[in-house]
Length: 388
Length: 155
Image (tube, rainbow over all chains, first blue to last red; front, side, top):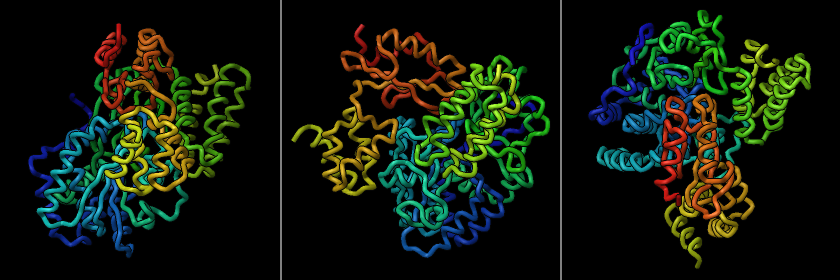
């Protein structure tokens, strides 16, 4: 599909053809500290949504003195509107494996894991075959490192890194308190570098092409490119790798159906941006950062239904461990239903917004903390639709 | 030994006798038997030397680790926003009418269980449904019913 305003980038899906192995062989001969410096220099930040600088994450894990360390690839892609990791896993798995192996080399780990959501079980057969081949190649390179696959079982919250560790250790996927951070105590309470699928592919590609080329893309605050998952009211839904730091206005020009009223950036836990703000919204770390989910709504959509859908999602996916999130999600859902039915006055929405503020402070993990993002951005921008 | 016990001892052999193996073992049982029976959970607990309550506690957390009997084929229709906008309701209605059950129920012949699921990661190709581990994007009410036939729906 053609995009007029935005320049498409081709790094993630660039032709594989033995590239991964060449990169791996070349990189395993380098000094780990130099690799870290390259990653820091490139400005790469985590592509899962949180945006932590990847080079620093690897550096912190490397600096931990512990004979046992782990690399984990977070493929528990559960954010509504996101499907890029599935495509990456299907199309360029070797680039992911290579990123994991390079990370293992840098931090000094012997084991790597890919935690892939249960909804993607149909990918496992092929992935396993490719992984066996890769592990064999590692042996031939005399690099003492092996990658294993682990599956999820249908829990959104397991995409939260500490919940993911709990799940891998055979427990309920309930997030832990932080600190300690994974770089200090992650899987099996050992230092763990956990990265998103897309981030690991970028590390492979930065080792391949050098930090300069990566850095040349994007803006000062948002270096490089990113894979976006575009869905909703668009004639061209799908996966697009684009430069970070783009104005939302250009995005809507390219992907909207001409009648776009709002864009939800970052999935259910992200922000809803309304038409009048398209011009001054930047997609990137200086504006609205995102794991790549871009859901487009046109004027035929009721934003009450959209918010209702998100809140139902959070009610079901809240792990139930901490009270602010468990009760908060339920009360927000009940609250907008009551306002809609006229059982509560419109001013009740202000009380509900205060509740999201409490959740932001008091919830244990990102799930409960971020429910206020869609809630406040939809209620503030589409108040009338919520009430009447 | 019952077939469940044999299956579990094989899975324990394969994945190891540690708590870290609990998820792969439970996933293996569900793969074969579609749900975790009380017997299965007690056997796993004994094999791993942990309490049965711990096994149930873990299993009951996960949507895909069912602890109530399910049909031979488990159908999950995505209900999250993008599929909602692409009229997942019509798919669910067609499946309910065809199977003569409601969401959450299992057919009398134990062939099909109909469930909804949160985002399955096919937002650009909704509506989407999973049958066991297989994925079917861009279904229509008609093709959804045809897919059931593939899984041996008796007409």
